[in-house]
Amino acid sequence: MPNTTLLTPHLPIPPPTQRRRPGLSNPRPTPRRLSIRTSLNQTPQPPDSSLLTSVTKLLWGPSLPPGLLISTVRTAWHSTWQLMMSQLAPSDSSGRYSRPSSRFRWTNLSLQNPTTLHLYVGLPCPWAHRTLIVRALKGLEDIVPVSIASPGLDGSWEFKDSPGTDKDILVPGADNANGCRNLREVYKRRRGGYDGRSTVPMLWDTKTNEVICNESYDIIELFNSGLNGFARNPGLDLSPPALKGKIEEWNRIIYPNVNNGVYRCGFAQSQEAYNTAVNELFSTLDMLDKHLGSSRYLCGGKLTLADICLFTTLIRFDVVYSVLFKCTKKKLVEYSNLHGYLRDIYQIPKVAATCNFTAITEGYYKTLFPLNPGSIHPTMPSCCEHGVLSRPHQRESLSLVQVS
Ligand SMILES: N[C@@H](CCC(=O)N[C@@H](CS)C(=O)NCC(=O)O)C(=O)O
Image (cartoon, rainbow, N blue to C red):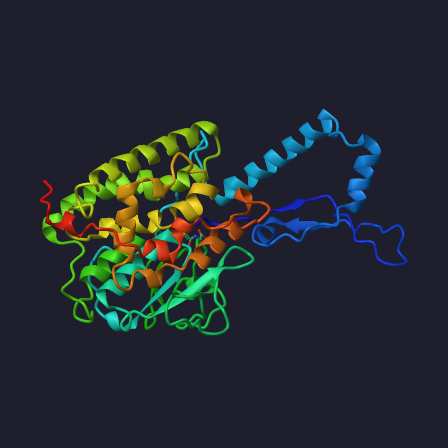
């Protein structure tokens, strides 16, 4: 999920056709200015286009308007799109998406006072999803309470007024630590304030009122090994010393080509940038599918942090990235090993409850206006339904295969 909060400029737009009200035969449109920041996230109301349609029919009959008009509209739309994209997703001079780096890093792997931690997440976000899975697998729910935001009308992460409750799945709710309306307010509460990107995941210290970390990989490393004195499942090590090298190798391949790779496809601002990203994405998926044909998880028979990081992108693939980000070469379900691997991880107890598909699809299709101006929410393919993801994966036997 990108930074929609940066979309602040106000562009003049032509006045909308006004609705005819009884007694008003010739309504006078009032000029107005529309904030992109707002329009990005609002479900557009279908305009009353009857007047426009009548004028168009009168001028051009059933045929298309003249080429000059079409090319003018096309040029205007393309420039507007580029303006929005440049703020939604920063890119280099050749149109390649470049993800801003996280501001608050934590690399100590331990904390002086882990009893005052609070985790902020949003359910559509694949980076935040990593932290929810490791928190659940390690049994850190009590020591690290969570507040779940959802994308609001102005693009920032917002909280609801009441706690979200659903016993089977995580749902958005209120800010249980600070009682704020949105995440920007929470970031601003830190000593010294803050004016940068208010991203999830974010780990907060309720005692010192400080942002501890807003980089997902640092947070999952901390959850994996830094809070064992408080974890209900301290014996689980998702990054054992013997596998650290392999995990890093996988991360070096998977982060740029798959995790960030899908964003490089979706946020590409030139054909060339898109072609490069999509080819790198699918050649990496081809390689991973082959590897997972003989290895249960990425590093062999043991689930590691590298798997969690891959999983949160794969689980969104067919439902979001394939359509919205134009990752179209193949569907994930066509990769039989990758799809079995996805089901394998999905079926680990407590993982399915972190995958809220309604929140995921609404978050992407409704929020990323420049990629989906009509805000139409496509039908979810059945391969992404809970029932299908719960089907047997038959990968247990692969755990026994020794992978070099
Ligand atoms: N590198 C960060 C990326 C986090 C990130 O980009 N989060 C997105 C949601 S998917 C966000 O909160 N964007 C809001 C913004 O940029 O204002 C991490 O791995 O934690």
